[in-house]
Length: 254
Ligand SMILES: Nc1ncnc2c1ncn2[C@@H]1O[C@H](COP(=O)(O)OP(=O)(O)OP(=O)(O)O)[C@@H](O)[C@H]1O
Image (tube, rainbow, N blue to C red; front, side, top):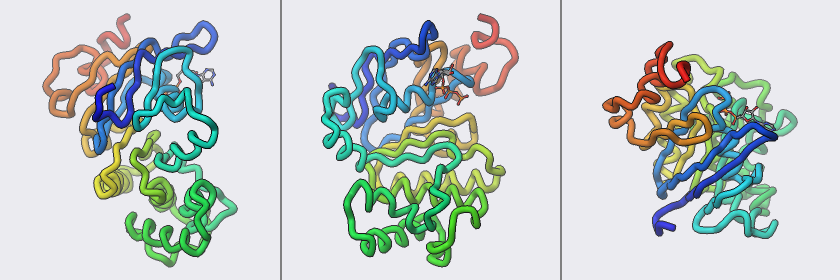
């Protein structure tokens, strides 16, 4: 593998029954790089991320995280690797029965075995990093707006200072102004950590703010990858149809 890859995916294939979802994905993501996966609904974006995270087993192919073949890890090695990975999934998925601070500290205490007092101190720092005041630390997620819940979820995703963070549709369900704030925070937090980011989004504004490189998934393959500037300049018919939302093109015309 290239010495510089934080994530390497080689010829990844995954089907459910007769439905081929991923059909030979190759991907390299460098340290500090922000890679955004786009593609139509049901094109396999979440399946790709779940395979990289080890939540789904590929049918074939290889996935390396920080140089380690994830299929060969023991349970304890996998657990250790996961402490270097942050995740912000659709809906935020905060624990309703825990306070904001407990939510943010969760991975530090559970995964990292940190003392609660130390984890709380870090949780407050991470809340500050997403522009939330310590006043929210001891209230419950249900008392917060959707945008503030997203900030808490972001604070939780960065709590362990991960090397890579996965974002699954981080701005879905938020209004454009709140989305813009969340995008700015994502960029700021990811840069500050020097982490890599892998993001799934349908939100082109979000993509333009956060992507260093973009990959377009169609019929199980990454049919195009490039920078945002290359995306705007390309005459690739898949990219053109997708980013301009055109009614005709390879997505719809077969
Ligand atoms: N556990 C599963 N069992 C069976 N089929 C699955 C499973 N997970 C995903 N699929 C199927 O795989 C395909 C890709 O799903 P995936 O969730 O990755 O799409 P997506 O690109 O993330 O879509 P969206 O943009 O709508 O979230 C879909 O047809 C879905 O029904």
